[in-house]
Length: 90
Image (cartoon, rainbow, N blue to C red):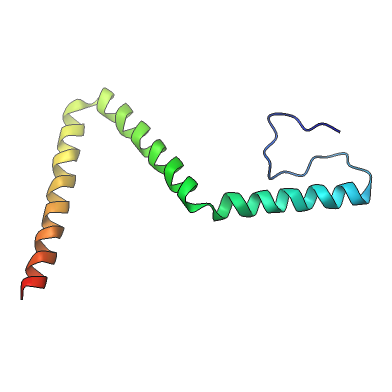
């Protein structure tokens, strides 16, 4: 039995008649799902790639808004660093 190239690893293929083969396919899919959910570095990497792509698209469509957003983020980060440094210096 061949699995389609488009089928995710976490899906049990339909049409398995043999109970042993079905159990193996379910176990394989469950282990793949655990790996996908538990692999935090990969999930973080994919999320950061999606965010970077969205930011690039936003910057291409609205360059002034992108500059304003960058200044706003820098101000927030700078303010947080200042508050932490001030709290530590007391």
